[in-house]
Length: 369
Figure 1 (cartoon, rainbow, N blue to C red):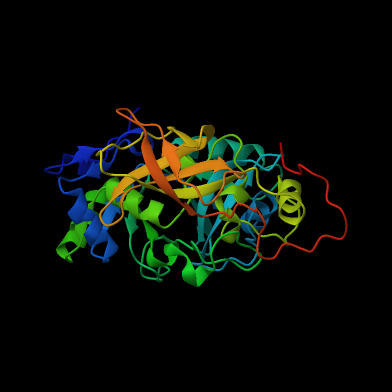
Figure 2 (cartoon, rainbow, N blue to C red):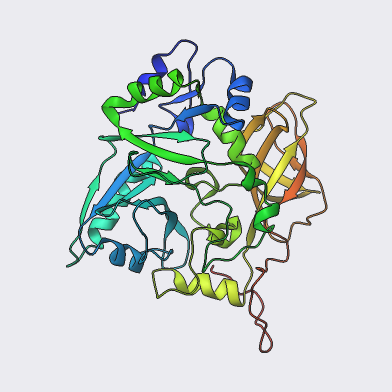
């Protein structure tokens, strides 16, 4: 059954499409919505996201053993994020994680919630855990707030991006220079039947209801990777600078850990994330999946695209690591190719800031493929 948010009945609502189908793309004035969101005076209906809960005394130790982040000492209302990787280290699931002292809450893309629940059930074995796809019971609201939830608030996840977590590392800019520091963000879970009431309460407090056009534009400008857009069947977290917040390099073994360690210690990610500043003079906007070229060579694809209220048309793209970092790109677009300046997210040398020094000759071509 196709989901449709009750907030789509609002005057001026234009429905989203693709990965954001079911909620509003905007409510008639996307530029004003984006500005309000950036200054902390708006919220976004993300009720198409999925929610999975894990309860039981073994929940944190068990999740710690099968995902990429250290979760053993996760306290009540502490937020983090973690990945499920394939045996070869490719990203399969990404989860926003918060624990309330009795239940661990996992927020993911709505299309992946059932799949994630099924995978967790298969990995349960004899552990004392109960796993539930709670998407039908809980809706998600996005807010530009840099704070964990309080004891008198409903379940709330604070986005850690781009603050490099203990045990993580970074390929890109230092935390205090990263554009993501300008994007406070958290997800608030409300009972699904109270979504309209929760929206009305925020509007009564002076906040504006915004669409995903606004939230996606700010996410792109923050270089923030997203499971539904930047990840394909070949993605490893290094390519998206996702070791900052979603991977602990010094915890015990988990599926895909060998690839994570090998690429970090000795290899280089085969691809890298860039932000593209698109030429807006022709008023053309490429589609997600559009080919990216450097010179006469195809080097990657567009993963996310939006019109930013200050930066103009922007996109995230995943390109070959060998693509020169100092050249303009060309993005395929219906109506004519669009030139794009690239902003480096993951450096072309493909080496993290804390990579161990080589003890001897390193074999060429070390990568997970």
